[in-house]
Length: 399
Image 1 (cartoon, one colour):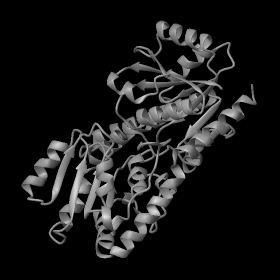
Image 2 (cartoon, one colour; image 1 turned 30 degrees about the vertical axis):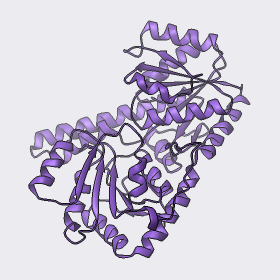
Image 3 (tube, one colour; image 1 turned 180 degrees about the horizontal axis):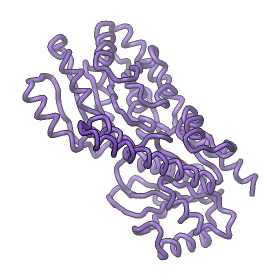
């Protein structure tokens, strides 16, 4: 079987891309692949325990493009006869350049994976927010100019990485058209969509057989994720709860996660005397216990690549209400069947209306819970691994 090398920025570490890398690596090992992972910073070494013991880790250093990194990676690719390199950090372009220097003279294939939207990222969104909030005309004009420059730089980077990769993977079919348009690429032969799998592991394998919701579920609305303003907009979740908590005293809101906005949100909740809302903070373990009990999941982000927490919740029968700020969510949720997608631009009234509909109609909540669970099965790990295997076979045929 083939040998695969993942290249990622920070690993081991908490985070969506890092968790996906761990899950894929372990599953590839089960299928007989030889797996190794190279990273430029090893943030939380203890997380190595989540990896199969056969997986080798390679430590690189910042800056990305230095002679020692090239030497280490080149020697490893040649000595271990690496067949495929999966680049999990394909923006900006410098990681791709490093990989191509390392694999030069070999038949090793490069697969670059874009873990986000083609035309939106945190840097672009931060500048866009400054454009929208700036009151001074000169400052607003400056931020508009910076935003245009960043858009151009991002487009150039995408085009470079696509050109010098053998395969380019996005997380949703809906991303393909926007990627090609934004990066001004005409040849679409190298791009394909492979979604992220559900990553919550339950012994003895990935299983989502949940007891009936009436026996297991509580009247809980859940948020899981980082608490920041720039892209997650968690204050919207709190705002929605603020509008309904007095009307539904037998329901509660639970927020799981940490981040720069957490203290401000806690202070706001206290000052407004918002009841039945609990901050659970950062969880080292997967938030299974919260998914098992929750009935409704909220996600109101301005920026998401895939929204893995939505799938995680759905796999446990939690009905998602998600702001439709990114196209991949329309692949995951059948609006009105397996969850609700609220329209752009964001209005808290739309979120509240969906919550009210579910709270007031227990039969609808039960039906959508079952639909959510069934829909999540499309992203079961074995299905996703088969898609990767098919891609590897196609690349092997071109050698």
